[in-house]
Image (cartoon, rainbow, N blue to C red; front, side):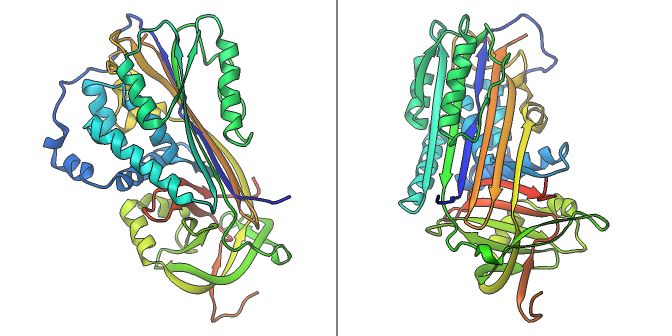
Length: 419
C-alpha cells in the first residue's frame, strides 16, 4: 500500500453559552483606533502571511513556557479557527483579539484577505498533492444568532451550517461533531470533544479542519535506513532509526544552526529543519528564533549537495490555549465582560476553552500528521569529511510551510524521536 505524507488539522471548536450575572475581574477599556498606535499600524500594514507567521512564533513561544518535550502545533489552523470567532467580536474584545491574533481591525478587509490567502494555499496544492480546508458550524436552533454573522462565516469560510439542540442532545451532537472531525482527518483525530464539554447551555460549535496529503519529492531509500544514536543531551542518548539521503537540497548554515529544506511532491510545500549547533541548546535557539530570523534563514537557502541523516519520528501533542491566549493580550474574550455582539444581540457569550491536539509521523516516504483545536465559548459566569552533512542526531526544530508565501502550516520540535 502506498505510504503517504499527510498533514491533518482539525481545529477550533467554539462552544458558545448564555450568560450569568457573575462579574469578571477584567475591566473593559474604551474602544480605540488601533491604527493610531504606530507599532500596531506597522503590523497591520504587513502582508497576511507575515502577520500569520508572527502570530505563529508568538503562540509557539508561549506554549514553550509550559512544555519541555516533543511538540507539534498548527498555528495556521489556530488562526483559521480564531478568525471565525473574531468575526463575532465587538468593541474592546475585538481590539484585544485583533492585536493578539494580528488580525486586521477592519473586519471587511480581514475576512476577504484571509479567505483569499486560504484559497491561494489550496490552489497551490494543485494535482501534486491533496489539501483540503473545511469548516463546520453547529448552532443552537432556537438561539438568536445574527444572520449577518452566520452569512459572513458561510461566505468567507465556507462553513456548513448544522442546526442542533444542545439543551437535550449533547451526547448525540458530540458524537456527530467527532465523526465529522474524524472523517476529515483520515481518522487520526478521534474523540476531539470529550464527554462533559458540551452542556445544556452550549450555543454554538465552530470547527475548522485541514487535511494535507503528499509524498516527499524524492523519497528516502529504505535500504539506507539504519540505527544510530540520537543525543538527548550531553549525557543521555537513545538508539533510533535514521533515514539517509545524499542529494541537492536548499541549505544554509551560520554560527547558530544548520538549516535544510526538504520538498514535498510538486515542490509547492516543504519541511524545513533547523538543527542548532552542538554548542547551542535547542531552548536557547528557540528563545532567539522569531519571524525575522526565520525569514532570513529561508531567504538564504541555496541549492547544495548535502548528506542528510534524519531520524524517523512520531509524536502526539495536546495543550490548552485559553490561558496562553489570555496572557498574550486578549483576556476579555474569556471573561464575563466579553463582547460578541456581532454574533448576537443577547451580549451573553464568552470563550471558555481552547484545546489543541496534534500528531505527526515522519518516515522514508513522507509524513503523516494531524492536529485538532477546540475552543469553547460558555455562558458568562560514517561520511566523507568534504561533504556538507546535516546529521539531526540531537534536538531540532521543524516547520511545514507553503513555499510561495512561506506561510507556516505546522511547526514543532523533536526532543526525543523515540517517545
